[in-house]
Amino acid sequence: MTARAADRARYDRATAHLDAPLAIVDLEAFDANADDLVRRAGGKPIRVASKSVRCRHLLERVLAKDGFAGIMSFTLAESLWLARSGFEDILLAYPSADRARFAELAADPKLAAAVTVMIDDPAHLDLIDAARDGGTEVVRVCLELDTSLKLFGGRVRVGALRSPLYSPAQLADLARTVTRRPGFRLVGIMGYEGHIAGVGDAVAGRPLRSRAVRLMQATARRELAERRAAVVRAVRAVVPDLEFVNGGGTGSVQTTAAEDAVTEIAAGSGLYVPRLFDNYTSFTGRPAALFAMPVVRRPGVGVVTVLGGGYPASGVAGPDRLPVPYLPEGLSYDSQEGPGEVQTPLLGSAADDLLIGDRVWFRHAKAGELCERFAELHLVEGDRVTATVPTYRGEGRTFL
Image 1 (cartoon, one colour):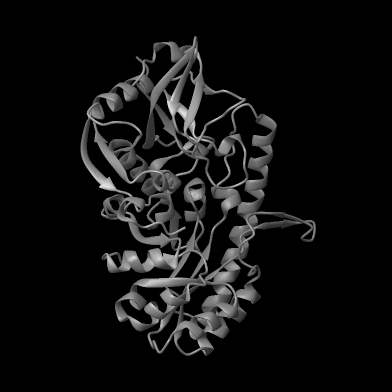
Image 2 (cartoon, rainbow, N blue to C red; image 1 turned 135 degrees about the vertical axis):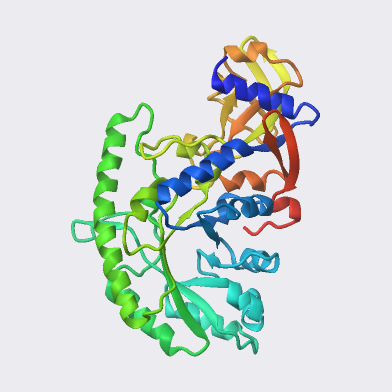
């Protein structure tokens, strides 16, 4: 029996008393992935990206481990909810225009001490001030660095369209603006190098593309390390007591941690290891989060149909954004239908061994987005479900 076949047998036994659709997290794999992230970080603390987890119980579990400290959140509403739930040191990774929540933040000492918000423009400060509604708490802010690689005088750009702050001078100028504004305190710098951390460099069947990605990433790492160090020097000249410099992502933990200027690493997808993280030379994780759909039809030889399963991930639409049939091995989508909202035909010889009521296990393309489809996660240890915990959605929280 292959390792994957053994996992399928375990998961089927563990959830035999449950009806599919359902979602699980294999805690042995989850913990092993967490330990590997810590090893790769080389002693620098890892801030957990809540977007990639979306389950308070599992956030608590990973933050209880040595090597993890703090949360990187994705909306201001989520940040305040987590702070009220007892989490501390929450860095909001994206600028917000949520005026009502800014008013809450500026009026509550506990929230203001726990949450740091992201800015990359003086207009963000103006928006926060206009939203205060009498609140006088000092708002902690972080500057976001544009980590993109610019070539040929800027005519070619590789990286996400995020912050407009690229040069040391630009960040230092905004740092000075923050220090001159009453009611704000600059505490950190963040830069997410998604073109390094979030792009696989060993795509199966694409050797030339993979080689080009590795070349691009090597160039980008060198350029960014030099520029980030210069940015940190420039900002520390304005704010000597800067608390943190955050960088990285699951795919670049060890290389970002090697930068002296970086004080902490952000990571989250590496806990669940969705399918988009199969194509890396820098690490190999264990799939920890899966969902199961029941077989409801057998249309013919080599075909079964499962209920639902059409859960595409965000990003540029394409086959790599689709969930992948994982267990049993050897199933694939019908190219004319793909994964559907209410039914999904699956092709392959393995289909002939599946009966009505059996389940097919899938892996989502991206990590936390799976939790927007399920209200609860069944936590599997060995061949037993040892707990069932709510996702954000299960707690009635759908932040985006």
